[in-house]
Image (cartoon, rainbow, N blue to C red; front, side, top):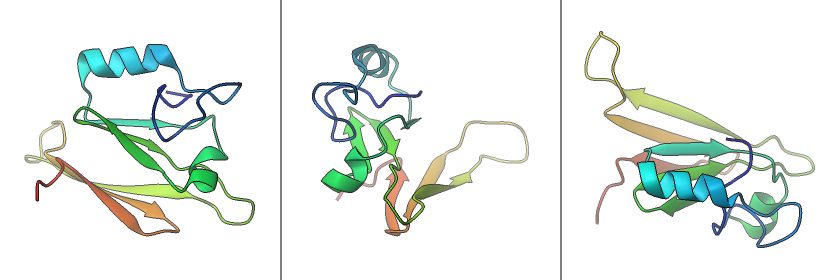
Amino acid sequence: MHEPPDLTRLSMRSGPLQGNPEWREAIECYSPLLVVSGHDHQTPSRMGFWHDRIGNTLCLNAGQGNETLNYFVIDTSLQGPAASLPTSMFITHLPTKEVQLIPERKQ
């Protein structure tokens, strides 16, 4: 999706960089494992958050700083050689090297 979902740490609360309320409704309804968005390039760097959760859904927005490229590396584990959904994902945000896991490990 292009815009981050509404009411997350990944977008502003109002104005042109406000999150999308329809995306949030869809996430709450369908509970995908992962949502990756863009549109709001400044909020993640300015606020210091590149991920948030809506229920069990991990929402990502790499954002962009003024000098450093921000991006994700997503490593997946599959059930076998046949086409399947990932059983787990190891997501690294660069340049911070912060990691998020799907499914989220409970502590």
